[in-house]
Image (cartoon, rainbow, N blue to C red):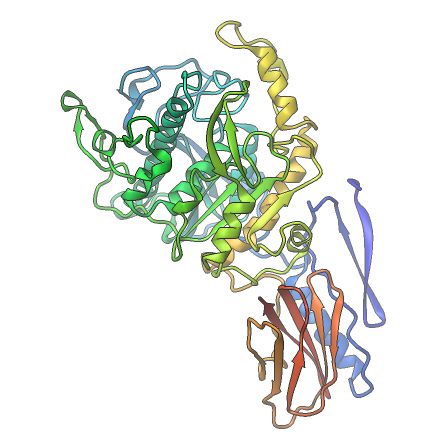
Amino acid sequence: MADPELVEWPISRFTLTYKFVYPIDIVRFIQFTKFVKTKTINMKKTLLATLSVVLASSAIAQIKYVDEVLTADKIKVTKNVSYGDNYTVLTGTPTLASKVAMAPGYGFVAMTADIYEPQDGASNRPLIIFTHSGSFLPRYSNNSPVGYKDDSATVAFCMSLAKRGYVVASMTYRMGWNPAAATVDARKQGIINAAYKGVQDLATCVRFMKKSVKEGGNPYNIDTTKIAVGGNGTGGYITSAYASIDRQSEIKSIKFRDASTGKVMVNDTMWGDRFGIGVDNPAMGMFCKSNHVGYTSNARLAFAVGGAIGDSAWMEAGEIPLIWSHSVMDPFAPYTTGMVNVPGTSLQVVEVSGGFDAMARCQRLGNTAPYKGKVMDVYTTEANKLNKGIDGLFPIAGLANASGPYEWYDTTAIKSLPSPPYNPPVILAGIKASNPMWSKTKAMKYVDSVMGYMAPRIAVTLGLVSSVGIVESNLASNVTLAPNPAKNQLIIHNNWENRVLTGATLVDLNGRVVREFNVNGIHNVYELNVPAGIYVVQMQFNDGVGSSKLMVD
């Protein structure tokens, strides 16, 4: 069902028609159920109330920061803005990233960002800092066609966010580790140090953007109180670590100590702290050039498209919320918990936790609270069929061994790579593993779907909108639902003096009527016995209808 089709959704005795594309790359619309027929309902008022809800939350009315409200020609892209400099080990010895030269198009080390700016005349705009994929190695050298900020999917994600009104900084970060090291511990040490530097660089970029406001005249018109960080693939490793490593001691956990010596794998005396703040003194074995000291490194939200978290134990209550999309059958980054392998080989590196396990823990800790239950749309509906009640998790299912179905590639350029040092057949084989569809048209549908799910939650968490697709009408505003979140029992108390509550219906996110409540008076108590999740209580009054959101834990 990849072709557009017409879907008619009945509302009262009338019909509204929406056009959308499946799977889930859908022009936004909200499913609404038929209201329960009640003799005392005024049908004209019912229709008006229903239509007002539809128009407020459907595709007809586009919402800035939630929907793409701009076209590509309204996005200005400033390339290669330097946001800092620090030591890299890509060359084998610590060298400032700005001094490492590489062949154009094969991957760069210099710490730069492409800035995507919506040309909408707005000021004090929210900022998203985005990190690309690539296994912490340069493009093609990593046996992959990805590894830089101009990767197809990275550009598509950044452009999609910019079209919604966000300023987006698509950043590079330092790379380098030895995936062919002889032992698992050696490979683990290499990749955790690479990830650590990625977190440092992300923090550096956050500080740079904040500094640009205070000392540079705010050239990008951003609001530094509304910053989110995100990334795809390897970028997901960086952003999830950034969100969860809030104490320096966490990087020194048992998991990241050498099994034979007990030594910590990340030497923060040598490389600086998790923010990239340390001592620049190569003669003394300390390689950290502190950038933009005096500015904070914090953001309000992190999201990941693929990737995994190095250690789920890093996650603690009170940290910034995460949002995650992950291919269920990702062969490289496990959807649950498992080993990461070196690209193009069967060599094991380290056990990590992917989107499902990471988001389950995030929700248990209460860190999804800023957006949990505040978005009800078709993306949420589809995700909830697979995510087992984990709000903030968008699974991509049905694609065997697909890691990045939102990516596409120039195979002609790959086939023309010099061999050696590159291995075009291995790179092409990896493409088939990461994206069997191998189509820009299909890949863009997954970009649209992922962003369609994430964007409302980003907007809600940053305080740009209060909710999406959930309208609590004035008629319902004076009715108490308690407790909310509910467990086994629900109380509906009508606080109106001159308005009679005549009926109530419990509706799930698929638009199905789950329960019909008989209303006998002002104060009514009901046993729920329904699965945990997000519901809408639709209420019928003597003079209209109203609705309120209900969470069931």
